[in-house]
Length: 127
Image 1 (cartoon, rainbow, N blue to C red):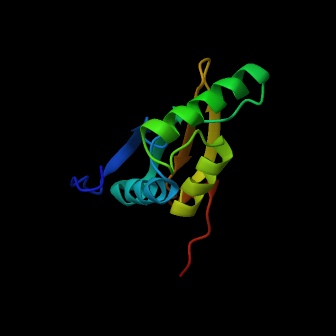
Image 2: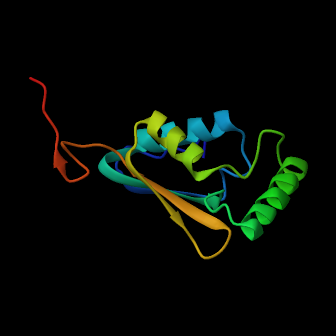
Image 3: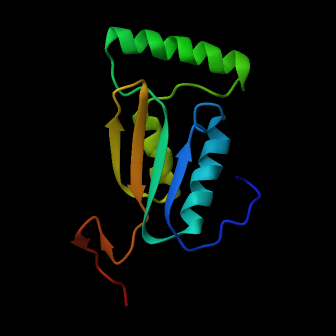
């Protein structure tokens, strides 16, 4: 996903199972790449293991997943909080970010690439 020609006309980009196993700088690079490949109004969907629920059972699963990915993949990998992933997407330029917990230990973070109408509200156009 770092070298393939992705074009510049994608309406939707799905990033699944990547954020958990890659260090921060590679995730940020991937999010910027996704942004560059999308049309205005396009949607990015990040689906992965992430911390979005502070319940004791979920916290235990998160700790075990952290240990696993640190050993099996990359010292910079990890089961990150959903708000951290959202902040990386925002830094790449995405807006209207939403975190959606799933019934498993997975979650989604979605965002939109801005266009003239951002998140259903008219944006000012500079002259």
